[in-house]
Each structure stands twice: as structure tokens, then as C-alpha cells.
Length: 562
Image (tube, rainbow, N blue to C red; front, side):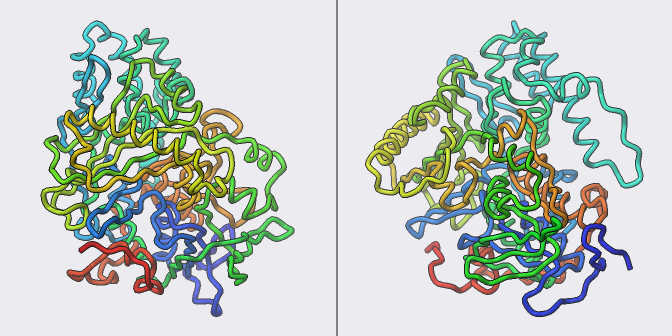
């Protein structure tokens, strides 16, 4: 019987005494759920503890007026075709399209880039994307071609390294990756002699990771572009359906999901081993493996109190800066939207570095760029997104990250004044972007800020993007920490933020624990779970209810749709 190299646990350990687990997962975001699911289907007895009412983190939804459902962060995902990475990660858990389906956005323009004097609809495919850029800026064709092809080659190399089949040799790194992968997008722009409009167009979707070209590694931007140029999709039935299905997998394989269950402390022994967790209730849960999906800074400095980590890691984590935070206006109208199934990236001007500087200075109430996502266009058949004849969308912008916990901010007059200015400015941008008045048709409007994100997600500094500088731009911690048996997954890991990045951190952590190349295995078609073990879907299936975990599915307080 094989033993796990970190813990000495049998590969299929039997159930331990009551209240004891093989692994505790702290936090129910995508990274924690994916890791917990792979451990559960591999025979580990797992507990996932989530402080909020539902699991999902930035992939969850919320409901308003018993009529509207808004996605918090799963606005669109890329690479969900037959050979896509996210479907492969799900299929390895026995999750097929019958349980989690993805609907493609407009293949001829899934993202509309709106700059003063220039609008580009981004199509699927690197060649089509380059052709569209060159048609918009013919005088920049040579520089655009060199820049885009360099990014394409970097992305292909990085993807190949992740998905190489078990036992196959790794192809030599490309010249593009060697020369440019660890340099910034700003450096590549300068080398390609691109003008301001071309620079802003190429980085117009940078709100997917939240940093300007001057500090963004080419590897980061290339993988983001490749992710969507392989096809942009939206989950059918909201991102909460994927979350609920991961919960079903965990519980169907003997795991336990507990919501309203905040962890107060990760227990670390004097010889730097994880020993379990202590809950806020005072309950202690022993386990030789702990996987933290909490914010990395909170994991190291608060939950562990620095215990077991080297002084250099503690200091680097304490000094780390975060990427931009997000503010969002959630909007519902009493009329449909006459738009294709696309997103809109709106920019006030073509100086992208100045736009980021303005976004990250002051109080963030005067946006220079914004992202619009239209839930009612992406899931038109949904009974929960909005009533027939209505529309549902949101407009987001970047704002300065919080410097610490927000404290008592609600009903603070200064906070409310900034929030009101931000809301009004976002409405102005929305009307400019969609091309018709929004205010006369409003049936619901609310604004969320970095404070809101911290309150519900407890994300570091209110950002969904993770670290900006952890001892160097682009540098991020490994999923394996210096504490034996403790892993850290989520938006701060080296796999990056976003739905796919956090899912990759989860499957990679599980692979390290199980000592097998899970990602390359599932990309090659391996399935570790039997789909027949999953519960049947009934007509009253509600992913938000399932995402609370079996013990609290019917607890009071669940918002519903009429």
C-alpha cells in the first residue's frame, strides 16, 4: 500500500475516529473545493470549513428581490471546448456536461474593446485576433504582429508544460518564453515600438488580472489571452452550479462540507507540522493535512501566527502588496438589451498606464475604465437571472486595495458619499457603453466595493486578484509551504487568479499530496470518480442551497427566486 510522502497516510485511509480527518480544507473557494473533491474521490476523509453561508468564494451568486440573481465573479471563462482545461478538471471528478455545461459567447466578438475613436470586437483564435487588431490599426501592423505572435508562442509553451502526458518528455522552451516570459508587457511594447492605442487595445482585457503593462509579466498576459482566445464561455445556470456540483462530489465520496464554520487557527507543531485546525467555536479538529484556501497573508500571519514559517517568508508576506481591488454596480432593467452575447471593456482614453495610476490613487470614485458583463444575455433561458422581458448586468472597475481590515464602514457618511459618486459614474459609463439610457428603466441597483468583498469573501485587501508584489513583481508563493502538511491554494498562488487559475492550484495541491500528476492525467482522459455516485438532479434543484453543504441545506435565510 502506497504511503503519502508528506504524512505517511495510506493511499486509501480508513475512517478515523469521530471528529478526526485526513485533511481539513480552510475556505470553500474554487481552489479549496477542487482540492477537497480530488482528495475525497481518492479515498481521503476530508472536511471543508467555510466561514460564509455558502461555498464558492468569488464564484458564488447572490439574489435580490426574489427576481434577480447576480454572479459575483464568474462572468465568463475561457477554454471550455472539448480539450479545455476546466472541463478536464471537472471530468476527472466524474462531472460531465449533463451537470455543468458551458454556453459559448459570440465567437466573432466575445469581448468588445471600446476606446475613444476605436472599437474592436475580439474573435476566437489567435490569427483572427491579430487580423482584427491590424484592421483597426493598419499603420501598426508590423509591431502588432510581432507582439501578438510572441505572446501566442509564450502561451503555447506554458500550456504544453502543464498538460504534457505522464511519461512524455517536456519539449524545449521556446525562444519567446526564454526571452520574454519573465519580462513585462511594457518591455515588449517598447521593443515592438507600439503606440498608445495599440498598447491599450492589447491590454484592454487586463482587468482579468488587475495590473498595468508596466508591471505585468508577459507570461501572465499571454496565458490570459490564450485562455479566452480558445473560446469564451459562460456557465449555464450560473457559476453556482459548478460550485454545487463540487460540493456534491465531496459529500458523495464521504467528505463533509460545513458552512458558517470559520476557522480561528491552523495548528502547527513545534517541529513545523500541520496538526489540524481550531474553529471559532473552540472545537479542535485534528488532521495531518491542512489546505488553506484563505488569503495567503491571513493564512501565514493570522491563522498560523507565523508559526512554522521562516522569518524571511513572514517578512515577505507582511510587506507584500496586493493587486487592485474591484467595485461593482449590479443593475437590473425592465427592458431587454439589444446587444450580442459579448462583454464590453470601456476605456476613457488610450493612455493605459495613466488609467491604472488614476484607478489606484485617491478614493477610486472616478473610473477611467470598466468591464460590463450581461448575465441575461449569457444565460437567456435561466429562470433565476431575471424575469422575462427584463435584463441583468453588472459594471465593474478597479479601485485602490484596502490597506487593512475595513472596520465599521457601513453607514459611514464619507464612505457612503464615495460609494454614491462611484455608482453615478458607473451608471454614466454603462449608458455610454450600451448606447441608450439606463436610469429610466432601473428596477434594481446596488454597489459593492472593496469593503464588500472583504466582508463576504475575506479576500486580502478586497481584491480577487491576489498579490501584486510578494518580494518581486510576478513572484508568488508555491502551493507547498514551509510547514509540513500545510498547502496554500487560491488567487495568491503561482497559478494566478481567476476561475481556472484557482482550480489549477486546487488540482495541483491534490496532486502533490497524492504524489501523482493529476492535471496531465485528467487532460489525457483519466476519471477518478464514478458519476453514478452523484445524487440525481430533481426539478427543484437549487445550486445555492446545495452549496451550503448537506448539514445546512435547509437552514433559514436562503434567498429564493419566485
